[in-house]
Amino acid sequence: MEKLIVEGGHLLKGCVNISGSKNASLPILAASLLTDKPVCIYRVPDVTDTNYMIQILSQLGASVERASGTVRISSSDGIGVSASYEQVRKMRASICLLGPLMARMRRCTLPLPGGCVIGDRPVDLHVRALQALGARVRMKDGNLVMDAPNGLVGTTVDMRGENGPTVLGTDNLMMAAVLARGTTVIESAAREPEVVDLANFLNKMGAKIEGAGSRTITIHGVGHDELRGCEHTVIPDRIETGTFMVAGAMISEGITINRVCREHVQAVADMLTDCGHTVRFAPGGDSVFVARGKAPRGGVITTSPYPGFPTDMQAQMTALFSLTPGISAVKDDIFPQRFMHCSELKRMGANIKVDNGSALINGVESLSGAPVMASDLRASAALVLAALAAEGTTEIHRLYHIDRGYELLDDKLLGLGAHVRRVQDTSSRGGEVL
Ligand code: EPZ
Picture 1 (cartoon, protein in one colour):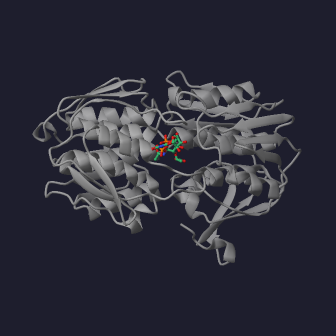
Picture 2: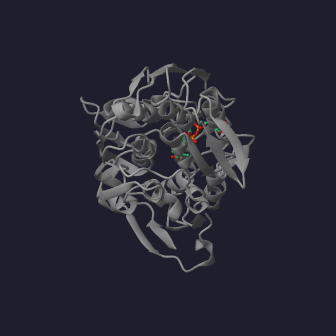
Picture 3: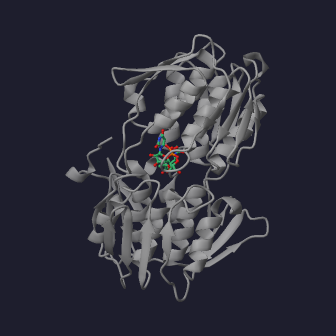
């Protein structure tokens, strides 16, 4: 096990390059199973989650070569239909294998992904969507067992859940519909950029998808032999971008973040500007300069589906609000339990009250370094941000949470002048609990 030791109080400066999107890469890697022709995907970040997905693809029989950010996949020798619990339990996003396996193989056995600390992670919308296309579904030994002996048939499916649209649910239905007979219309589709990136990849492969990025997506089914190999570069990681934007607002007189997509981070940019920080995009929108404001002020955030304020950024903003004069509020309507970072921030001196899916933050003059424990990917990022600005030294245990979704985070922070180092964690706090 490893921990990150952060010596706080050092102003960040310089520039950092954003990696390819983890959340775009995962469904695109899964979608490669739809065709038996080779595909090549560029700028796949080297993080634990993409590594797990690549392991599962290999287990299913695909041949996968990875050279730094480039992943070449071919499943010309056919694929299996069952993924192991050992792999799936580590990464609940493996649920996005449902669509491609049902489309190509017409059957699959997938262990139900467990919940996680940010909340119960149901899959009812995924199941309902595949059933609407004609899949038969049953549970057996903790596995989702699906089959569609006569193949899938297109129809109209409304994907809205009580907490809004589902990103991976939309992905699964879109991928399943690619090889379904007839036309599928997805109503209440997720509009996230990662859904659009998947649709672009599928269309390069020969799928016929219209409307990705809007609430209604139409997929005209094609024959398996119409799908071809293709090449695709995944979009920049908008949550990594937002995380570094918050770092600039926490403790810098200005950092430059390159390889970004302005449109994908507009909600975060607007919030930082409203809170008195400096946010300036380059004309092309692919680079942004962020600096802490001279008179920062608190804000009120309610997370919502894209293009609203992302749930994956609320923990990072809570860290910023902890050091912002005045009262701020954060409400997460997508994952109401996603506040594990608050108890650790309070160990560093933050003044936060969590109640019923909301956090009320009273900004303090300073935070103080302390040993803290990461609990999930974005909570860990919030702790790193707080540690950068805290007085003294912070030890962040259970670093594997960060390694799930942030590529070379230590190196990137060192490149910005932060004083961080990754060391072996021999304490009891380091135990891996997956
Ligand atoms: C994706 O998860 C992201 N993960 C999450 O990012 C992100 O937080 C989430 O979308 C919301 O934006 C990946 O893309 C790999 P959902 P996903 O289905 O698709 C409810 C990170 O930090 N729901 O859009 O699994 C669900 O409980 C991760 O990178 C159902 O009710 O999330 C939630 O309240 C964390 N039934 C809401 O919908 C279902 O069948 C949105 O979840 C599915 C979801």
